[in-house]
Length: 236
Image 1 (tube, helix red, strand yellow):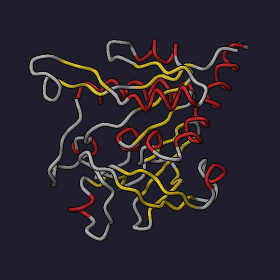
Image 2 (cartoon, helix red, strand yellow):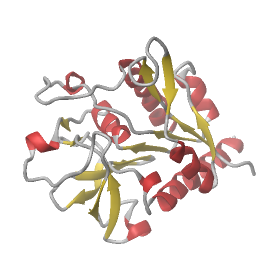
Image 3 (spheres, helix red, strand yellow):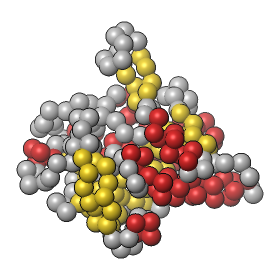
Image 4 (tube, one colour):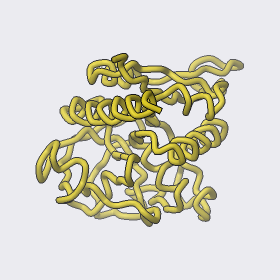
């Protein structure tokens, strides 16, 4: 049987980072490498692809990391210094979320991807941990990575993979505030920051598994679920 196709969303640079005057699409190669090592066929996705076509082509999806979610998307004003993600990217990925949720296709959100999932389905965010929760420890962000332990919920998708706790690569300054309806907390940090959430086929982690020891198991789980989805579709 052919390996399942796992789409990976990309960031959009509107002439601000890579080269002035031109739009570029980019994503860390580690995402594709993690998918391939887990047995999937990675496919980097362009916003020029229609969400419905992506949902038809892909057996699974990774919403990769990115910049900050504009607070007006969850009904708040900015109260901290933010670097907003591309509005074009956000709108496109929200359409993807609708298609993949409706089709019950496996999906993994990573860092920004988890935050977008939570906001899209009705949750809110802590705009900046350092400002809003001074007692929180350093979770990285702004290009900085830190390592810390997370505690895993007993009935979560992570528990069979890692047990009660695992150390992760963290690089975020935003976090889930109000959890989206229908989702469950899968892991937290010792300071109370929510580190993973889940709902049915939608899995999301606040850290970067493609950059640490958790990547092999998490991406293998995604590919395994995508392979089952592909097989079920082939029988129809």
